[in-house]
Image 1 (cartoon, rainbow, N blue to C red):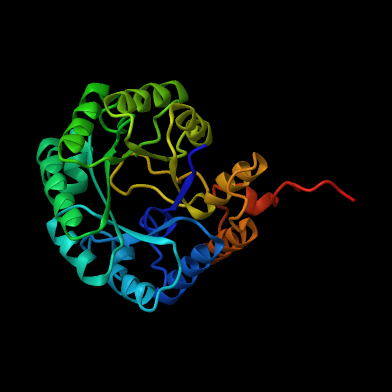
Image 2 (image 1 turned 180 degrees about the horizontal axis):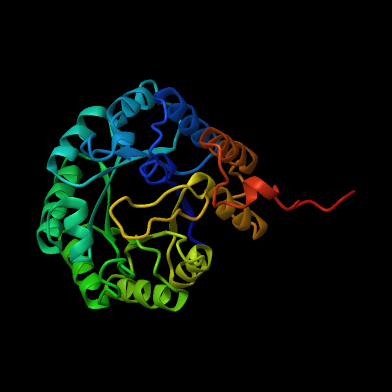
Length: 303
């Protein structure tokens, strides 16, 4: 079976909704512990205007700290929405660029100030620059499964954006359920259509748990051939520019169920649980994740 890739997005998608700005040293500590747990990719932050998302104001400094003397094999990713963000990311050592445009016209304008077509063109241009600079690149279609403002998003519009990425030679593609509207049948159908366009696409999924279907959608994506999964410690997260913001599937919940099936057993689940518990304690409230509260199910038979 193709290796399952775990992309921790808690430091970016998890924290961007939080009004309480987390100190730089605390963020750095959480990220380093997640890296030590053995996940494949950590999304350190996004390169957005600090007035719009104050939580991300220290992203550049975080990357400088984490890449200086780095020995971990964990890739450090960053989200950029335009050319200026790309310039900042290249300057501070981003190893993998995540760039995306929304299939929802309304969400696109709220998020970037541009319509879907213009945003897609600019993302393709920026992605090509990142590739030319020798960086790993992932492009995404946001609001791929529906929009809190517009409702259903035509699947052909999503596939049209995927075609634009493929024509530009970009074959690492994520479909993001920004509003949390996806259901398992839709997930299998849409990812199946993407892989029909190009069976060699490296597909990633990103599901919000707004209506409780996040984990079910992950398993539907796996059945369709998706190999990379974006999740957040403690289930933290949500897009500030969607109508109803909700958290992600929790990283420790995903790792827990994968390990029960015999996959990714080398990842240190206890370390991930400890981070999730620290995140919950820091914010002083219950989080959406489960395993950090219940503890894992024992995988060894009692002696």
